[in-house]
Amino acid sequence: MGLELKPSKTRLAHTLKRYEQEEPGFDFLGFTIQQFPIGKYHSKQGFKTIITPSKQKQKVHYDQIARVVEAHKAAPQAALISHLNPIIRGWANYYATVVSKKAYSDIDNLMYQKLRTWAKHRHPNKNGEWVSKRYWHPINGDNWVFATMKEGSNSLRLLNHADTPIVRHVKVKGELAPYDGNLVVRIEAARESGKLKYSPGKRSNASVHFLGA
Image 1 (cartoon, one colour):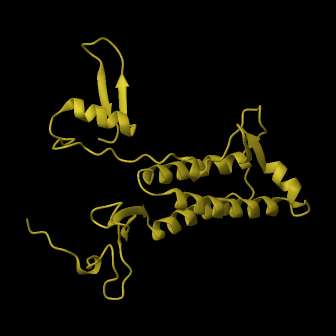
Image 2 (cartoon, rainbow, N blue to C red):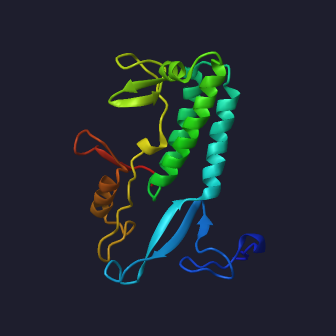
Image 3 (cartoon, rainbow, N blue to C red):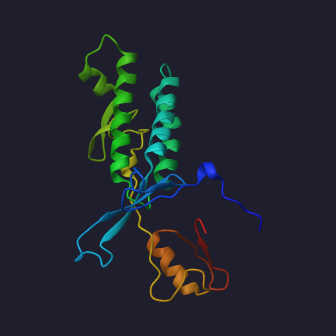
């Protein structure tokens, strides 16, 4: 087809062991793919494959959050939350199918520190306790939520990356494949993975949609 590999973006990598002084694993589409040795009683291969958000993409994402916070130094808290939530939701959802809990937690911690600095900058003459009570409130059992109002009010709250549930992919059983035309198999796989949207109605016109398919 006349396709060629671009040398600057092509390299040999080992996913389990060091290769020519390089750490094992490689990055692809924002993910880091790496394998780790485990006992023979846990795997016949002697290793397991772990896919995580790449360090580079984590940094890019946090830098974007930091820029938004810096740009809203004088803006109302609600405006800041409204700008951050779509960024957090989109990034967290993209990585929700891999091993992302640690990455989510790390970014949430960095984001909290950034927001603390943002809040203190707005009230330089107030102590830390006053600032905390002004911007962090208990909501639905969580006692430390960056939100506009206290529990019982119509609050606008900041999303945390760690609130995003991790959804593992559904393995196709046996010799079946998700694209072999077996609609029942595809529906069951989509239902288990949360990617099934069913539009109820009469039997003749009810429809099934596969999100992201």
